[in-house]
Picture 1 (tube, rainbow, N blue to C red):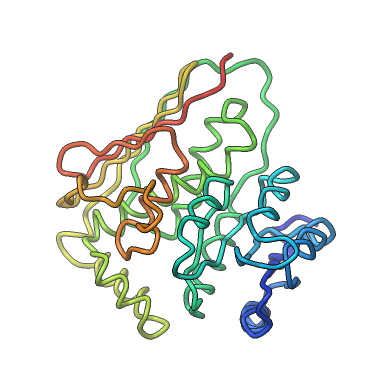
Picture 2: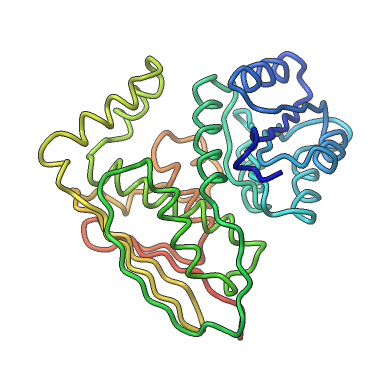
Length: 303
């Protein structure tokens, strides 16, 4: 059965029973199909039989830890989204997980609103993601320019359209990572760029009542000068690389002080999380001017 006609399957891998039951109950109450496992070995078996679209996994577990399980999962599938749950003091392991192609992470204690936000975000990605089409011959050059308004709800569809331009060129093992990296960059351009929402405002809204974040976004979308701004996406692909230039109409920011994604301790910082995740998806990420234009590059295998 196609994913778009059924409930998303979610696998929870966590050795702490209370934490595991908390997440299982929360996700099942949100209407998703859930399976749980107490360690990486059980989680791997569940992954093979259950075939989940989304996995939440702890890193430190007995028998088989989350890193070993993740590495084995990625040898089987690059289509499932994997979110690691990490505790303070394990930042180095979290960075290693991201380099093993985990897609995101949550810091313990995991909050209900963070889990729900991940569910909605990744369900949207998976629902709008097109099936890969067979490409005959080798596409050597492509260009595309796209302009979109401040509409966070259509960004997943926009990214899916951008990824269609790269069919047959970006290897299957790297496509999901690039897809999610583009999603982070474009959402960042809308929320922090065009709508001028800073990290403090976003954090307070997400930690507040359930509708606070959506209300904040709606208010900015209808107020001057934010409502008339747009994001420009310019794409080009040749025999060597894919390159996307994303330009917003905001005031920019001090991009030179963005946390270094290669420093594990920055994973727990409040600022720059999306940018750090995006940096791990591309071979190069460069800000231009006052920070309202970013260029991301993905090198391609030789023709």
